[in-house]
Amino acid sequence: MKRVLVLGAGYVGTALYNQSTLSTNTEYILHSRKTLDYTNAAILNKFLFNNGITHVVNCSGFTGRPNVDQAETNKKECWELNVTIPLQVSKICKGLCIEYIHISSGCIFSGYKKEFTELDEPNFGVFNNSSFYSKTKHTFELLNDYGCTIRVRMPFCGTTNERSYLHKILKYDNLINYVNSKTHTQSLVDFIVYFISSYYKTSDVGIINFVNPEPLDTREVTRIMTLFDTNNPNWKFVDMDDLKLAAPRSNCVLSMDKFKKLFPDYYVETEREALTIALNKK
Image 1 (cartoon, rainbow, N blue to C red):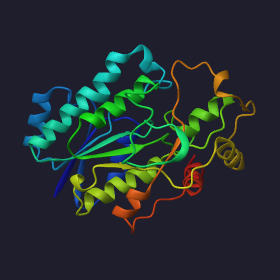
Image 2 (image 1 turned 90 degrees about the vertical axis):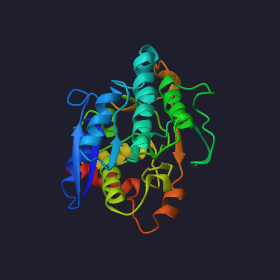
Image 3 (image 1 turned 60 degrees about the horizontal axis):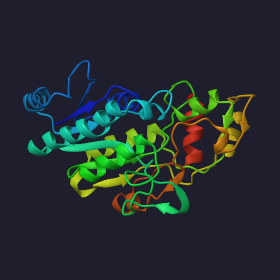
Image 4 (image 1 turned 120 degrees about the vertical axis):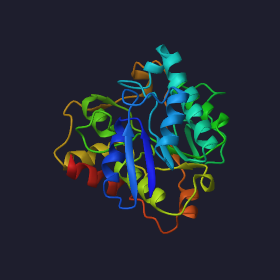
């Protein structure tokens, strides 16, 4: 029987653990840093070995509250949580031959000249004028040599979870209108459960984008939200320069071509379909 350790009892980690209850051939174990100090290499190594863990899904990391601007003033913690600790976890998993899945970010690209693939050199990362948050995500990819890294963007579920993209834009009066790839959290955790329960190896995947196809611009997202009686009457669209941001933002579309080649029979809902599902649940 497969045994999966989910690190990070936050937004994605909790959603994955809740979804995993539907799995019949795999046991999922959820831990935060409070219940298992996985920042301590000796503690994590002992736990993995003694509990027969076959897979680790690392959903932990620094995201910043209310947004990534927090990374600009808390760089030490951001670097530790997004680079140092994940690399340590990856190294331990490699030493124990444990399958490792790391949930990361596609916010290392910006622009609309193309849909960015896993082979493209990030243009919003370490060597560019980018946010410190994006620099740490790129750095991990540069230094990591094990397992599978899943890039997500602007994750969303309903409107009640404060970490959901839909909740965030609901409470913001000023919005910017860009087309951006986004990731429905339910789609993501469904895929992870499927991936682990199948015969795939993380080394067969490497870095992969996971977003919902056919991304929409912000105006269309808000239009759909109003159809579900979910809106902010004070919404207005402004230019990026009108927002008081401490760091630049990534705006881009990620390609799902690699995903489709690796998993040709696996269906990922379009963004419009995923929004409808999420808003029906609120």
